[in-house]
Length: 406
Image 1 (cartoon, rainbow, N blue to C red):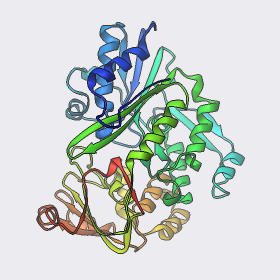
Image 2: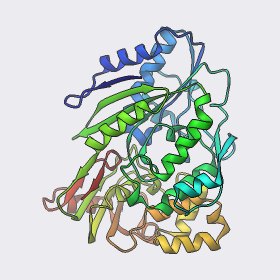
Image 3: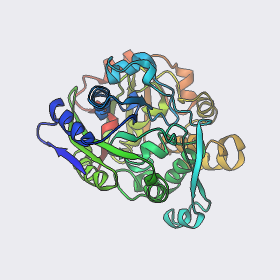
Image 4: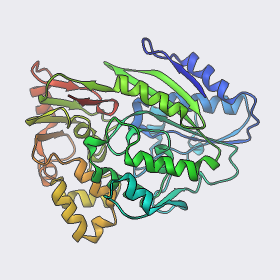
């Protein structure tokens, strides 16, 4: 394992480049696949790491390099987003697009007894492990999965194998794993390793994925005002790097407060958050610190839709964020929701069950759209004028990098 940490100042580009070069030293590489996140993980540091790896592989190893953003259910990146995230040194022809519905193959399954055991009997069925056809292409000498370790609402702590089985996985496994997390409960998962979902991912790694030429390049980052620093970089074939990254992330990305928050304002970067599917991190990451009867205001200038996928967008509009029990009832009686369990899980995650109020302040979605899914609406400019400068509100600039709790 190769690792580098600087909790005080963060890692500069020269240190990162040296670390990446060390990870490639002595290898004969003809063809390499890089798997970074997409622009929805803009603060991960993965953009610069991907660009540095591309440069090293092309110019020092003369290797062919393909880049497969781990989209999961997200929409493909535009060329403009590629340049914002990775810079303009990587040509568009290097980028591949993951198709989570059709471009996958089943490579194995998680046994029913194992799923039942880790879920405490909540789910009693096998789970199919599906991966992108690109990952299973045997022409690659090396696959580098690049991702950020940070508290997460479905798995507890992203990333590691999540980048592979979810980011480059298929609809069945994405649906089942998201519902497993929703059934078990976000409050029991977020910020913790060895959640039921992580145990399922670990099973997939131990029995199937470790046979593939995949290595993991993991970061831990923090944002100070508008600057994001990479505090830790970990490169390993196994779980060792992830374990170290989890410890550092739990130290810096979990923010504990003395008392609940009555009024919280969360800002969503318009380049990173364009749907409530992504923007609801504002809800996930603050729900454990919001006071009963409190008010969460989400400043969302770029949010223009609900789901990243057209079908999921339709389902969110149809069923809305109406609470855990209502969504579970809908899931049992409506085949369209049962066949899209990740959407059902998202609707559960994005519901407050009446405990606190959520106001979405948007430019592109109107009052009828926002209120139609169960949130309160406020025009973006009005909300900015009312809340941005208030001293008596708790302000969060980037919900994707933290977990706030008592």
